Image (cartoon, rainbow, N blue to C red; front, top):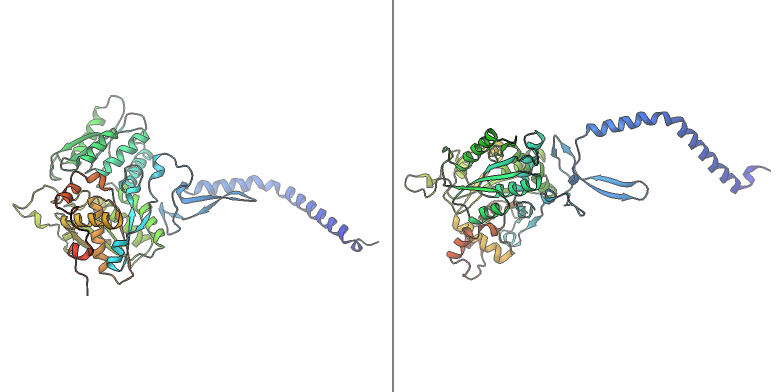
Amino acid sequence: MALSDHPRAYGTAAVALAFITGVLVTLGFKDLYPDLERRFQQRRRAKPPRRASDARRRSSLFWGPVELEDREERDGVAVPGAFVPRDEGISEGIEGCIGRTPLIRIHSLSEATGRTILAKAEFLNGAGNSPKDRVALNMIQAAEEAGILVPNRGDTIYEGTVGSTGISIAALARAKGYRAHICMPDDQSMEKSDLLHHLGATVERVPVQPITSPQHFVNLARRRAKEHTESSADSSVGFFADQFESPFNFQAHMRTTGPEIYAQTSGKIDAFVAGAGTGGTMSGVAKYLKEVAKLNKLKVVLADPQGSGLYNKIRHGVMYSSTEKEGTRRRQQVDSIVEGVGINRVTENLEEGRDLIDTAVRVTDAQACKMARWLVEHDGIFCGSSSAVNCTAAVVAALSLPEGSTVVTILCDSGTRHLSKFWKKIAESGLEDEAKPDNLLTLLGIEKPR
């Protein structure tokens, strides 16, 4: 009787034959396994380390955890890809709360302009609650990798700052085993220096001086770091973070903030608007969007407060403000109630992206105050002075673009750090007692292009 006359027997024999063949083939190639494993490990070691934020893990029924790449990196810079939200599970310490912030639509500004105005909610960074968290973390990690900073040795991080960077450094320093010493001008809001004290930092509030003075807050911080290292009896060092000139400032935004904005908008962005203090955010984001993501038609707009010389530097190539006239200047640095942005020199960080800035918008103190109040009344957004400057400039930039365009700006920090100065000014001006305005452009004195 032929085997073909019994289909069940034929099927069983075929399965058995396939199984035996598979075993023989496996045994025949077993000697190749060590070589294949060696090659695989070499390829893994050759690749740059993958960050937790660059991949999501999902389970497969047959293969177990599988990593799904959301973006790739080229020379340490993320290339365009899908946005990776913050971890849904457990993050590693306070560092896990930095970056991947939401991009929100500001409804009232979008409706008033007929363009979509989006804001990167950087006040939701979890260490110091500002975009400076990204910068501080990057500068500290770079110093650790270079062997300059060693945790729990008594090392101290010194920085000259108007507040936000110092707060980020103070929080991260405690978390990573360092001390913080912050030098800041004495005309900044008391909330900032009080917060620094509560974070365990040493704070020196110093009289406002020009950058050429040895007593300028940045120069003082540099000198304090040097004195620490030279006089140290326990081998600890003083590390001057140098946010204004450090390349790890703009690189932090080029590697994180820029890619996030690109991914969150799917590359559909017509203008990016931001102020400049150190210039790191402006340069880092502009370099990513224009040079890496190749958004060649993107319009990059500098938002500058009154008293700062950057507006004229970008528009006319000359660092000059009318408040520099003899007898008109009330302050040594920038004649504005606005903190965090505006400066009368070009830093190394701003220089990195200065050629990528297309134009600048000057925002008065009055406009900043009115914008801050408008955002509270219409959108429930309680922001600081630099955020109000950014949003005002975003409105002006939006009106210069065709209807339906998309503008992205930055919400830097909360208004809670500006109660004793900026928001006090708003209250004193009567803005909180006035009837809720219904026309934004009239309120700000901005004419809509015909």
